[in-house]
Image (cartoon, rainbow, N blue to C red):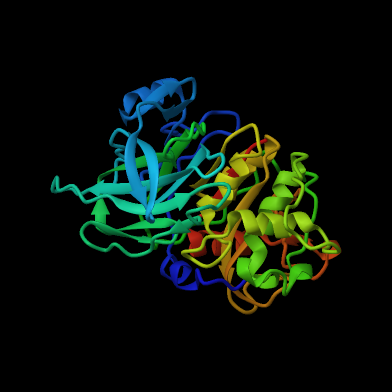
Amino acid sequence: MLRRRAALLLTLLVLLTGSLVAPPAATAHAESRRATPHVQLTSWSSYADFKAGTRSGLKLGRGHVSLLRAKRRTVAGRAYEAGTWTSPWATPGFGATDLVPSWEATTPGRSLVRVEVRGRGADGRTGTWDTVADWGLTNRPVARTTYSGQADDLGAVSVDTWRAASTVTSWQVRVTLMRPRGSRLAVSLERVGAVASADASAPRPTSAPGPAAGTVLPVPVYSQMVHSGHYPQWGGGGEAWCSPTSTAMVLAYYGISPTPTGIAAGHADPVVDHTAKMVYDHGYDGTGNWAFNTAYAATLVGGDSYVTRMRDLREAEDHIAAGVPLIVSIAFGRNQLAGAPISASNGHLLVVVGFEADGDVVVNDPAGATNGEVRRVYDRAQFERLWIAASGGTAYVIRG
């Protein structure tokens, strides 16, 4: 789809030299695999992880933190009880230029979480906290939103990505849990982290086929195009809905198809409309926020759900071999992706569902005009080059 993220992705037209990402069966916590010094995913999700951070107004649970002796706070003119968890400093081992945070949280009723990040430069200077997002499942009374801008010292927010003004050598994330004052809503944080990366322009050779060659996962197919004109307040369907359509496909693969709420009768695959509603970012004015898609998915799946970056398709194959489809972010110009259902896109999400025996990529591309035209096969070299160049190998990992 063509999205407002165009400017963001055009500035990401660089090549990363590697990635650290969780093996498909492991918990993501300062993960290291085929280590290279340019991408590192670090997250906190266990009792020990949360204990290592700093808590204010929160209590530790098994795999979560929740409110205890919460403090008063006002957000958007409304009174809340709040508690804050601050991570330890994460040190990726290189000068990072980008952070993409993601989280898993339980936000019943009118509760919400606020996610902030800050960096520290090589000179030891610590930046101010920048607010990335206010997020809640129910979207009320504070709408889910991001806060682009805040370019006041070491970095700035651009939708779902925090960009360093130069580079930072370490970073922190802070999450504030909030519920209406006087309520007893069980708001909690189960996971939070970020993938740190540094841009690198050197091209890389196409990866060789690996363990998923000849494996195709039975991911159901949904077309975003059959929703063209649906719900302008959530982006209007069609080319704007590649991300929620991809998320809906992966959830359906795990047997998760929530009953749509507030969707008009007669809509084909109304779960897609519902997903668009649930991931819509009112600050960005679109459904393509990476972390908002994984945060929503996390409320439905039993496993992990987060945003990461990968070195190449060989790394993606490990997930496919483990039965985990990936939603990836690409961009391409005219005639750059043979067999694509649309001629070009400044930013498009689709699902990698497997690989041909020769290593070519099997995808569910939601830009297909109908559900029957969603399944596609793309040339490995073309696809890998476009994926890395457009988003640095960004992927949603959703495990059921």
